[in-house]
Image (tube, rainbow over all chains, first blue to last red; front, side, top):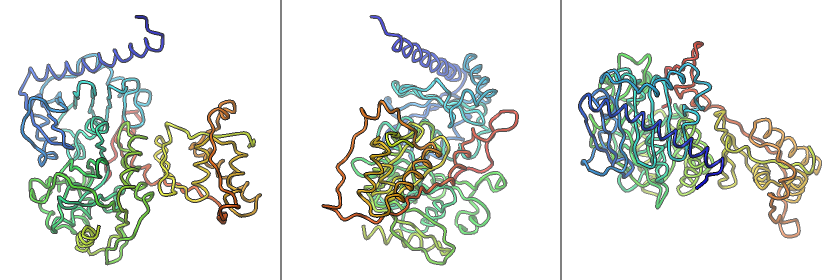
Amino acid sequence: MKLNQTESNYSADEADRLAYFQTVFAGFQRAKQNGDLINRFYNIGSYTICLSFAGTGLVSQLTPAFAHLETMPTETPALTVCLWDSASTGIKLPLLVSSLISLVRSRWQEHLDIRGEIKGYNSDRFRTVFQWPATLSVLDLQQNLAIYWVDAAAELPYFERGSPLRTILNWWLENRDRQCVHAGAVGTPTGGVLLAGKGGSGKSTSALACLKSELLYASDDYCLVASDPIPYVYSLYNTAKLKGATDLERFPLLANKFNNLDRLEEEKAMIFLAEHFPEKVVAGFPIKAVLVPRVTGKKDTILQRASAGAALAALAPSTIFQLPSAGKQTFQMLAKLVKAVDCYYLNLGTDIGQIPQIISQLLTQI
Amino acid sequence: MLVSESFIINSPKVVHETIDGEVVIINLEEGTYYSLVKVGADIWNAVERRISFGDLIEEIQMRYSGDKEEIEESVKALIKELQQEELIISNDVSSTQENSFSVEIKTSDNLEKIKFEIPKLEKYTDMQDLLLLDPIHEVEETGWPKAKVEVAE
């Protein structure tokens, strides 16, 4: 059978992408032969996902954020992510990929799209992104197989430890009506609220203020949402982050539990709630409302009706601008979500003890 | 601006959703987002239908009450602003007739006209930082990407 020129070019490009994927995978296999293979299984967005670590370097760095989602091993996970780091395993990227990454590093403006996608290497089937300081993510959607490589596990920035593998998980889950969103989520197993807004809007404060209430924590930063058959939020990370001394003073319950207090000049304070408050972390719940937190400086916290458009504006840009390949499909999914539930501004007062009361009261009314 | 000129949404760089009469628009490459309501939302939805500028003016004048010249100038100003923000681009005239489609506009005979208000494009740049917070975007003079110190909440 003869292919026309366009088909031929497409096939050649896709064949090259497959070769690239296989070459990166060969690197993982070398690392696997060189050390321990550790498989961990997690229920993420109702799918069993296997994180397959070659060597131990990345295990302690990446698994605490998912600890609350750990599940039983299976022979047939829906997605397998193969992970290794060069520093602890002694296995570098294969030469061809290493040369590509060197080129990307030196002339990144030519070779990377706006959110780190390597130009020419992404298609409907294959996705790949290179992000600072030296992490490479590759996914083959046909094989349900992903690879995650970092230069040195010990040098992973705290935000990568706090919300690991976000790009790979979103790529894979977005075709399964699961969308990674930049939002907090608190509620009970029967229903809760999504807290939508950019950094500094009060998502973390609102979510963490609920730790001393009947409400359970699903997220203060990133989570997964589904719109069918009903709006639903899945917890993704149990990571809580606070910024600055004022935040820490507001949460004496947490203050002595942060493990990076000596680095607060450069990092947000971060803890894994499943380690300290496992009973307060929930895997997910139906979304009953979207709340848009706003810091008012007044004492009392009140709810005020918001338009679905306002909720979409709070939820979508901060989600889309941070996720490689996110665009029209993500926007449509989030629009569908905010149309399906009530939306409110959560005008935050300084008495943060009122926050869970207001949310609980709302949940009893809708 | 020619009356026969039409425009198209600058996809895939621009994504948009109309929800309860409000249009939310995102420029994926610039990290900016926008909101249009009322007349502005009607103009955007007309642009989406690829109707000509002349037909657009006619539609708005049929739907809204007000000074016809003011309506025309306001629509023209918004169209220019949308172009300047690279949210819409001029459409090829030859494809306009093939691709455009119109909707039935109810006239004053069967619907009371709404008072015309000058449309305003609300622009938000507060999340451009978020795009910059993506570590790859902070760059040293050497050309090597460098992460900003803080990250999004």
